Image (tube, rainbow, N blue to C red; front, side):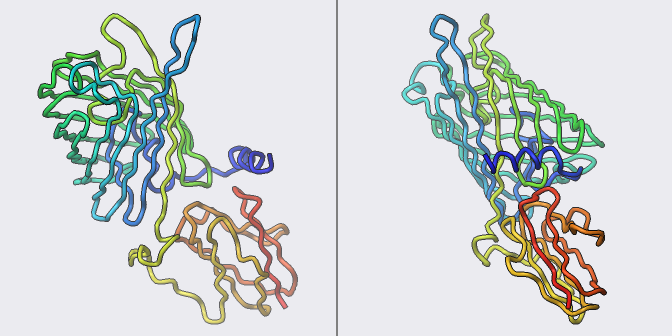
Length: 355
């Protein structure tokens, strides 16, 4: 209950900010691949869970989860895979299994997700269930709170009865109502649909304040997030089945586990002479009190994956939001004890003792 209360407090009290890296749910629809690529040294894990409730009297629930795992290697390149159970496979030879696995790579050739202007990405893939070489060209255009999406897809062997080559087109729109809330909708279909109808989705997406995670509530008629799964609707023609669900994103920064992944992209930290460095990591300030003489400076370095603040309990001026990799410096001229905390994460506490 204590952890739940803290999470609710974070959602209610965190100040406005900007989405952290790899927050693709604020810039793409549920059935759109988008142009997101994890930063170098970041492994992105997305859990998409959709379900269908059968008509009465049973009202049983059928689950359709999709797991996405992708690693960023720098220069706009990512490699990953998706695994979906109970995928829409139709009938025939492809229906020997309902577990769909897609291996993919992505190269963002132009722009950056969330930045103004155009962004273009190329995604070659291989669908193990269909034994199909697939691919997608995705284009995003962002201006202010609006992102327009488009995608062209191709498969050499469609899942289901036809097993034929197919082309698909998809498009979507995302509107960010606040820095933390976005709504989206998209529509995609094979040019010559055989086993189903067009795939659609709508979503309400949320950035969890002060964290690197996003969450969305969704409704769709597509069962998986693969290139093929996002191009065909779940229900046969003439029916109207809707799947509901959610998606949760978890970027894992490998540099937290090994120095091999630190890289050299962060500028060298410049510390004033006589200053003391206090590192913020794993949602913690230094466990021991920082002790300095009067007139000295403390430099807080955010080595965490989330934004934090240094907010003093008294009248001493604190910091704005400190982004991952950012710093905050403060000079203490008067002796005393200065307790402080993080505003979005009030369970994080520290103290500076000035002699």
